[in-house]
Image (cartoon, rainbow, N blue to C red; front, side, top):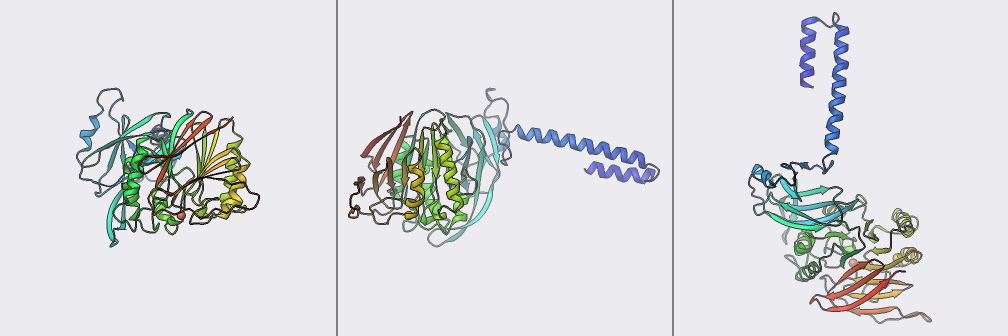
Length: 438
Ligand SMILES: [Fe+2]
């Protein structure tokens, strides 16, 4: 463009505009054509970059098998950055993942994923943390990777740190044998402030089972409006979250901090807090009860269409649903009647067999209308006792198990079968059951 402007000035000064008008127009057309061709080639080059338009730059050195994997490392120099938040993985659907981490220095981020090296620009943020809500400047990195290969461990190394960190995570499984974990109500943040040891304990135990992903049933922090509380959550669960994609159902304790919540995650339905995804032969739906649900609203219409589409898909063998407040419970907080009146009828008319909720800080297993409902709310917040169970006259009792204990569940999907094991925070089995689809 600069050359073009300079040329025009020289052209007009030397020859005069009117005398050379025909040549002038001809050259303008030639420049326009040249501009279109170079723009097209540039767009093609961008599409061939596996990082797509995610803001990452592929700076791989040589072919993956050329034996000079480290060739790029010398070029990127040394770094002063220290992690202020350990890396964690979220899944956006379509085999695409986002890896987040955060540091204390304004340095360009570099991450090696398998054999390729990517550059990640930081986002500078000022946040209030700690008991005294002191303002601190941090640098957040979100590396988006699109269309990763399925059914394998993806290795990565964050190089732009004073001490580089290496780990791996599971890409989306397409086979029908996989493991995921469920827990919730860790409720990090106040009054624990520095750390929640039970949450740390529970997530460390879950990590030993090597789930491909983990679902948190909500009430992740104590006060969603305080950004600092998320540090405790991510850092207590760092051993797990760096290896398994994290999905969360928003809880009532996250209300009042939706902007902050939104900044922590990158889920499959854009900025909506309700979403679904496929993994192996199963379809997973995560809902936002705090967003409200009734037959007139957007979330309900989305759910109805999503669950009915999945239910009629012959490739989907199992349907799993998660939301925070349970439709059935016999603990401190009463059942959520919107969930019972509007969500449950949709579950009953489909092949949904397992629903995981939280809100009450305990473990409950309820079996009603061929659906297993788990209250998985023992991730670290103070525990709640069981209430006296009163069934309506003529109603079949449907409480299977109640145990006031910190807990997590490991779910193993294997073709037509689902095996659910729930453990306490000493890794002792407290319940096991199987669901088999014909
Ligand atoms: Fe709750």
